[in-house]
Length: 338
Image (cartoon, rainbow, N blue to C red):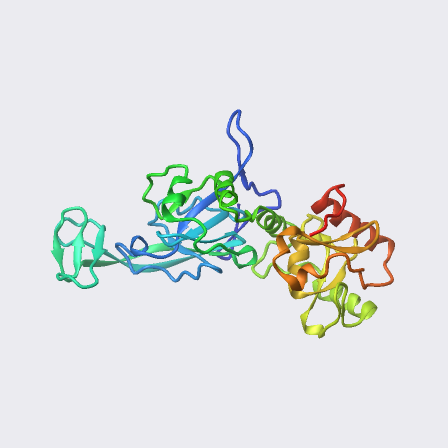
């Protein structure tokens, strides 16, 4: 793990899997409580935006266990909210008020909405209107995970999620989750598990980037300019588009070379994201667009399937790059018909 300027970064070879003796390789995954009473007991709560970032501090069990590249499923005690992959973890020193029972000193407090006194101590059952408080020094943690967010609001209940944890009876706000069982639970109710999106995001996070705060791709601006000079303001999949929404797509999103020598294409921002995840790719045998079944519910993207690639001419390097991208996401299988 590399720590620079308050950021925790994965090295290119960062482990995202846990190995057990005689067991199958499995994904590191966590169930994180994003809202609810348990997140504010004994403190002032956190500034979570579930689809973008999640916060905690070093008073929380498992506070140092999460790593960039880990899968996270967020819930609100009642139901699942969504899943994503940790892109980075910011850390900083800070302070926070810690609240406790004035009778027994424990931090297990329940705030009542109507009944008075306002607080109940779960440990000693004392009732009071104002808890004791002390200002404590803490280390604050905050994930960034917007890139791979998949909204799964309400797809699994709180009871189902608890049963999918490594320790189903755990009361922790951050607890290890059995990822394969989680995906199977989604599939069992007819919801497509976001495995390909999660895995694609993990590849994007660990490949082709400098290890720095901005995570800027090496030479990205010059690379994009060269593609604009060659093709003009045209998306390779849909045609003319404002230059402001066009981005340079390249295989190095998933690789460790950190260069752009393999070539690339100009893609509209939303299509670039789907291309990076392998949900859209190009059949190297006929240069037709191939759209994953996972996008079948979205007519705007589904209608692109089978249409010809609009970028022309293509260099030898670009053709090789297209073939590599296809092999990475489709293997040697024939293109499907969504």
